[in-house]
Length: 386
Image (cartoon, rainbow, N blue to C red; front, top):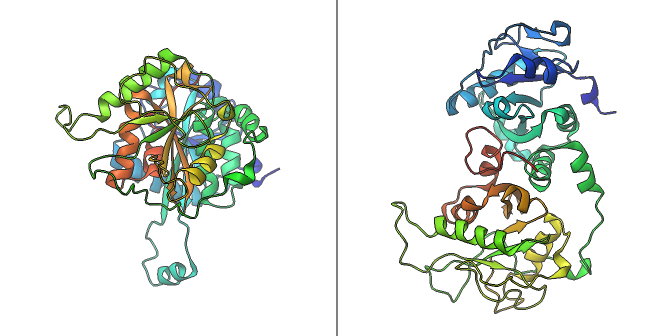
């Protein structure tokens, strides 16, 4: 049993619309969950207070700056509260008020530091905040399991792995679904074949193409996807990505997705600039692959000079999986942050291509997008699972 099993975990409300039934039946029913009455945690509600007849959250209706301030307030207060976790807490937000089944967990992530960084920090002010949060959407019935995993996590990478798992199981972390994901045997044939290409790097540049062109964003189907869904995806994703800031159609060469049809050159038929009239061929080898296995293919096959005629992005790709049909969402993936770490976020069709291109072209990081996605402020994330 992890040390987190003996911890209490804070649950705060950022919405005034959280009803008492949810608090009594989903939070205070568990002895490991407590709710603050005061922002400094000097007064809290526990299972012993159930049922409560009124509650006013000290953290309700936070704006963006308020969230950062609350995170710091929580970090400092939790450090003083002897039996509370100092690694993570849960948030009931406007989505929680609507669905009564989910929340998001905010984990403090200490930045990866070298010995030189630590030496420099000794000379800096002691009150400098060296943390940032990792947010994960979670089912309320499984929030203690997620909090305990974060409590036992050895380093900051573990929090991002848990966030990736949420994206992979439909956008919302569920302990049972995640365990099935972890137990899934590898389905990638000839794993040794898919070693990273020496040409792979964190800066995908396609030489020899018009500078206004984009590398095609590869789309992997790891489940059977209907033609209707494929057409809807291409129509919605391309329509938004191909417009400028004023909503006008771009005159330059447009970005496009390419459906991977085989695990051999050329890997795809033609880019899907328009919704396809016929079903693109499906490589049976892709069915059931995990996001990590897809990433192995991307790093191995798409960088030049291994296959000179391949014009596919090798730092970003999209996955249509077993949750795509029901949720009308896809997984966005990048592999060029944190020293090549795989980053995942589940996204609705319309925002998919635009979001991937925005990350690659503007320098915005996938980590930031994946962190904002589980919160009530995000318009891109798929907030309900199938």
